[in-house]
View 1 (cartoon, rainbow, N blue to C red):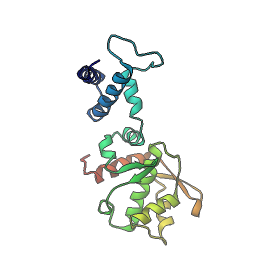
View 2: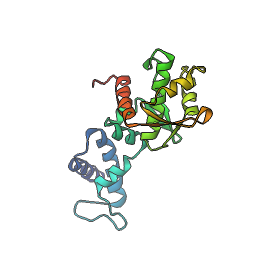
View 3: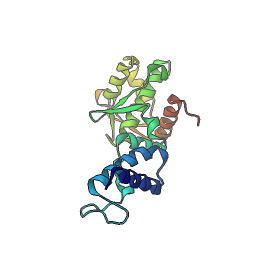
View 4: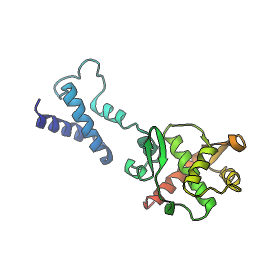
Length: 192
């Protein structure tokens, strides 16, 4: 198969899949890989051992942590990538401190929500350690040692809390998911 034929077939497969615009470039790349490596075409069945359709293979490729957060929040991956990135299988928050609340307690709450929400919605973990939240707050210059535990405890409306002191962990509740979505939209300057 010639290169132009591979590109044409990949383009046609992506068009037929009716994927949202944000997934089309990735889908096109995956379609090229699939067609060129397996010589897959419209008139032939996928080679033995390949039982999935092109759209199913494309969907599987979109299961990264960023895509999972985007899907759970109903936002595009591009928006989520303005807030997070993955480095060695670790979710990092990449916003500027100017995006955070000006008060230390408010910024601590936002960072706690961003960290725990991102990790939990991406499937990285079910519970997030308060120590990890403390480290992120410290990194952003928003760690208020005397009030940190009190600030985290005050978030019981959006977090389930488990343990005390150094062993405190938080888990996002349903209202926290909606609050996280609104926070991300606010940071990314997206109208509701």
